[in-house]
Length: 236
Image 1: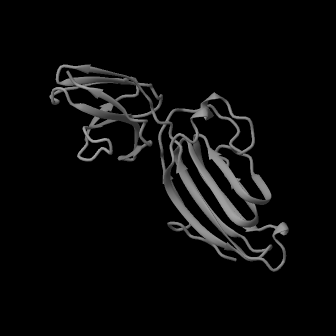
Image 2: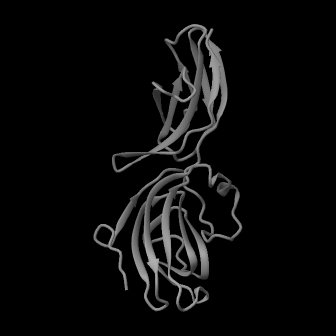
Image 3: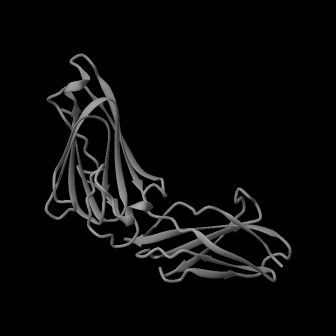
C-alpha cells in the first residue's frame, strides 16, 4: 500500500474565494443550481498529485484538510478503470461519503467545506488482472471571474465597471496599451460592493486593453480568480 503524506499527512489547501454558497450536492452528476453556472470559468491549478494503479486490494490514500474553502474542484483521471472513495469528517461538507467504481474520471466539488477528507484510490475490477495504470489528482480554483460591463472613454482617462461577485475581498484591474498586457499596470479595488473605477493620468488618444479579476484574502495571503475577457477603449 502506498500512503501519500502531504505535509505530515495533511495538506492544507487554504481558502479560496468567494461567496457563502448555499449547501448543495457536490457529487458530479447531481443537478446543480444557479450558482454552479460559474464553475469552469476559472481554471487556476492549485495543486496536483499522481500515483500508480497496480492492485485491487491496496489503496493510495490522501488525507486533505480544507480550511474556509469555496469553489474548489478536485478532478481525478486515470488511463484504466479505478475505484475512488471519499470519506469526510463531521465538520466537512458534504458530510456524506461517496464511492465511484470503475471510473476513468471522477470529479468532486467542495462548497464551503470545513474539515478533512480522506481520499482512497485503487485499481478497478474492470481494469483486468494484469493491467497497471496511472492516475492524477488536480485541485482547481473555480472562483467565478467578473466580466467587464462598461468601459467609457474620458479625457486622458477611462472608467470601467464590472459585475459584482459576492463574498470576495475585492477586485484587481489590469490595463495596458499592449494586447498581451506587457508592461501592464494594476489597480486594486477593495470591497465586494465596489464595482467601478476611474483610471486617470493616461495618454491622450491611446488604445488601452482592460481586464478585471476577483481576489480573496485569507490568512494574510491573496488568492485570485482568472482574468475576465479583455476589452478596449481609446482615451479622449
